[in-house]
Amino acid sequence: MKQRPAVGIDLGTTNSEIAAFWGDRVQILKSGQASMLPSCVGMTPEGQLMIGQPARNQLLLYPERTVRSIKRKMGSQEQVSLGEQSFSPQEISALILKELANWGCSQLGQPVTQAVITVPAYFSDAQRQATREAGALAGLEVLRILNEPTAASLAYGFGHSGRQTTLIYDLGGGTFDVSIVNFEGEITEVLASHGNNQLGGDDFDELVLERLLEEFQKQHGVDLRQGQPKAMARLRWAAEEAKKQLSTQPFAQIREEALLQVKGKPIHLQMELGRDDFESMIRPLLDSTLASVSKALEGANLRASDLDAVLLVGGSTRIPLVSQLLLTSTGLAPRQEIDPDLAVALGAGVLASRLDGRDVGRVLVDVCPYSFGTSHLGLREGYPYLHCYKAILPRNTPLPLTRSEAFCTASPNQKAVSIEVFQGEDEDALKNVLIGEFRVEGLQPTEGPNLVVCRMSLDLDGILEVTATEKETGLSKQIFIQGAARQMSDQDIASARKRLQLLHQGPEFEWEEEEEEELEEAPTEPAYQQALELVLRLAQLQPRLHPDDAGEAEELRQRIDRAVKERNLDGLQAASHELSELLFFVESTPR
Ligand code: AMP
Image (cartoon, rainbow, N blue to C red; front, top):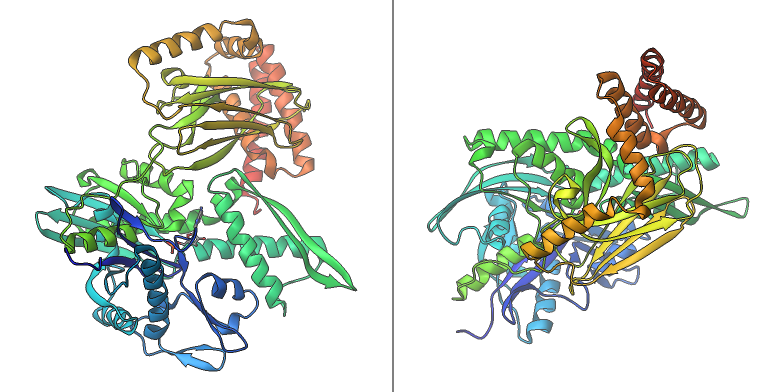
């Protein structure tokens, strides 16, 4: 075997990565803790070149001395300037490739001279040629230019044997692509591609940024769009951070200190953004990506049922709504066990290793082997059910992993909640395995629903940490469950289920018992069911309610409660009608 290993490089719009066979598997080659190099090049006022994170950092201070998203310009004759000097897109890309090759050289302990470089499936010949040139300028022999969707499929082990068809949904920072790749023996073919090279996470950042600007203007009467480039750059960064937080938690707190001085006094931005709110902002953009998925399937003359897998690629696919929408539209649970930022580079690394003569099947990763979640009161098949299951840590997600979800208390002035931790995939919590439970006492009594955030973390040693926090007060309680990721035997499962049933009859679950009785006795008449749906909808919309509406909504909720208890059907229908109108008004009011 030759001495110098070939590497795989994903030259991305926002970030770039390098992978190679290292140790016993194909891995990402890092620089310190960093596995991604921001695709940014900058020049300091003193004329010093900066590549990657330092350049990304100076973007805030010197936007005119920093180049980002150069991939969009590959294949064009356009020059970009860094301060007083100008460069071709190939030259800027070469600087990024060279930096990655240096990362590789440090980790592998030998120079990196040969690479497989990936490009989007839709790249024209001119764009592919420009990428080759960038490789040559960086001193690399470009062994192959590989299509990104093909690379992602290779990382997942497709294309190793048999006939398989994959759909790759790639939503990055600045581009969206969906491709259908067919593997048959030695032949790999991109059957169809569709997308929008002007759509990505940056657009989501812009939507959040607009919300922050509106809020700042509302709080301080200042429009930062006018002549405040530094404050704008800081807010853009804060918008992206908030967006990322919302992929793993239900709310993001945004606090930017001293954005501006007014009459010598610093003014700050402080606000909260909820995931629901964020999801409705980006929903039209995600709907447009689903239309592209349909077009790609049409173009390949296939139906969703012909696919073997849906694979997620690109940092923006971490947004949970992306998987949810794809599951609904294709019927396949999208796979994301390989870090979506790294899948393309890893796949390029797989091909590079094969070209080096290694028989590499797929990339090996540590993943969450089951879903972990909790039970809650909700609707199941249209009926109220006390043991609905909400998976908080989804199965097959890379470890370590932390996610949180918010839940509402179900009754007024509720002072305690019980958190039951389950392992499994069934939407009925009782069909999953109870692996732990605890109770949070001393909640502040509230008339309306009180939010409790449940956070779960699973580390590489299989230790599951579960924390429940009352959002308003920060009151919290935590448990650790050892060996959560280990496979349960049938006997374990049976005894866990039995224990759960016993617990539900035990005295410490009095509160749930009461709720359960109430629910079990609740009439199944459509009016009662509609009322319950409205109350659940109200709980979800609670954070968006104006204080005046919140008062009215609470009154209506109490009227519904009374009507249910008194079996007063007319009263119930009248209150439900009013609540439904109020909710409709809230939902259709721009936020
Ligand atoms: P890529 O071009 O594939 O490197 O993707 C970069 C994009 O992914 C940027 O817009 C990031 O803001 C976005 N991104 C990264 N992590 C997350 C996350 N956890 N949630 C949402 N978007 C993310």
